[in-house]
Image 1 (cartoon, one colour):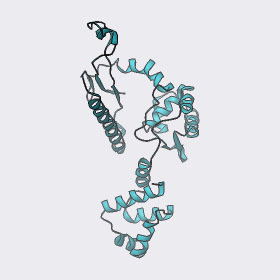
Image 2: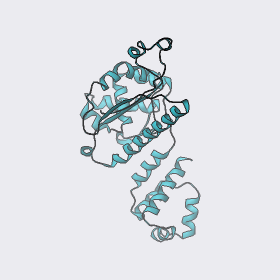
Image 3: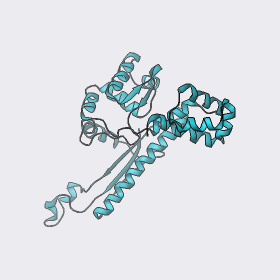
Length: 264
């Protein structure tokens, strides 16, 4: 589905939500009902016409465009070259992570020791790399999906594994809305695949809630990070205590699920 089609799909949904039929809309914008139906059936619409319809229906055009952008298919990962470019500059990686969290440029500058020119140059570079589409007034739209993840064993994930994970688990995980679990289990491969599907659904739910809560004020939100791990694994110190051949196999048996949430 193309971007114009997605915009019209969102617009139709918003019109139905407001109880506005094609007949009512036609009366408000001075067109016949058949012309309105034909206009929506063409799967494209001029921006001026979109603005007129939104104004007539009492719908914020910005909301329609934002919802359409959220629904437009994007890549789940960056290329290896893109990740290497991010890792070449700590400040660029910082701004990239902030963009993935939908921070504004003003929020980035207020929080971190970046000057406005440095932040603008980083946004321009992220636009060049394809992570974002830079808009007027230093606003942007993400060019990656809500299911975005860093490349497995890519440079960013390697950096996180070496430096970020230990810092993450340095917390107590006893704050409001925080949790730490390590649940071992012996499962069949089919059951393990089912758990992976549930983890993927949990990540999708987190992305959905993240999008929904963007409507709230900054004071009503806090930064949380979900770190998921699920693999066939056993702590080496425990493997050393196994009997006979099991001690040689190294990873026999346990496949714990690690689901951790922590305030960023």
